[in-house]
Length: 463
Image (cartoon, rainbow, N blue to C red; front, top):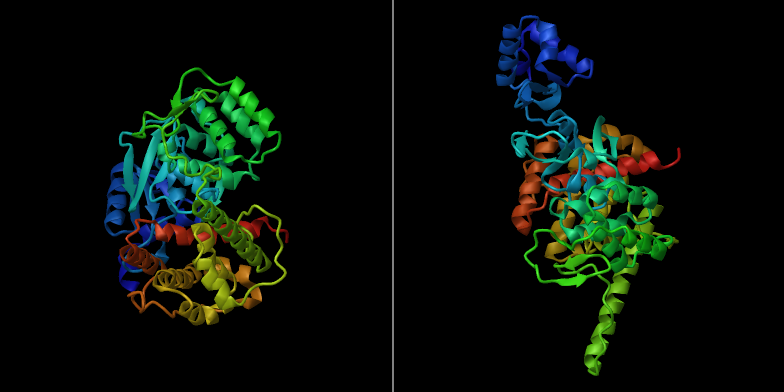
């Protein structure tokens, strides 16, 4: 790093270290001018520091200090969510990004959605390689914003209930109506239903109430005073028919008059009634299918209960089942990566970070898996190795006396370089897994989300 450090003058180094020490890792030109004095000289210095990659410009007049530990190539970036309030004012992380922040979705969206009452000249923008989408709303829709710590930075995010109302208002920005149905199911026991109702009452249009009411009814969600609540919602509905999935090509769906809603999308979430048919073979097939789904749900609940015994408690579940013991490590790892739901599969990363001794069982677990699931465990294990190195200061206290470094067993298998910054290797792992699976998933964001879930879970647990 000496060649880059010596590229700074003493006064420039003082400027960077002083601002960083005062918590001004992101600053404006006006704040810099107060340090340098002359406006023209300030612009000259900032331009020179930006060319030297000591600064990165976020917006016109707003700069980010690149830390010294970014390395000689100055490869570094802040958390995607933490940058949002510096790109528009006022700002709130919202829609799909907020749903993922509250753990209501399984995969991290590649785009950061930011809600504001201010209108940006460009609705979409890429900053530090991260795509942002700015959504302008009227004042009456901008509320329910809370400050959340993200990578040690305060970030404004729509709260749990407002995130669901926003998703019902704009499903197109939130993963679609199927994603909203999933989010309601996952949030069921965490929701403040009175607050949700209050938000629906103050909303300037009736579309969110119609969609949420219909989904709560269709999903048969067991909330308190369910029927009374649904009746109150129906009595307050606005006139006019709205589409269940706005912008969806299916415009000829059936009309549900009690919700004043056109069902113009596939209801993949809806509980299916058993089909009545004289064909005994089909009846047996239906029974087998139901039994298979029940067995899969029971296995998921048992796995989550076993993870809870190991101190991993961030996964929500539908029963109060308590596991009396935990299956052997190699079987637990292999069973986790076979699960159909990504939120349960990625818990294998949390398991390895919380219990690094499970690394010894990885070779045996891999031998139990077919090629598809083997790749999943290989990538999850390697992600855990790199995350442990990147977040060592946060994870070591969590693991305590069990701490040990996860050995890098599989980088060669995945075509990753033997050396390099953990974050850069995580990015390469993301690209490699996308190439091998053909899935355009934000794997890097998914891996990072596991660490955040672990840390938040630990913060909620009593000391």
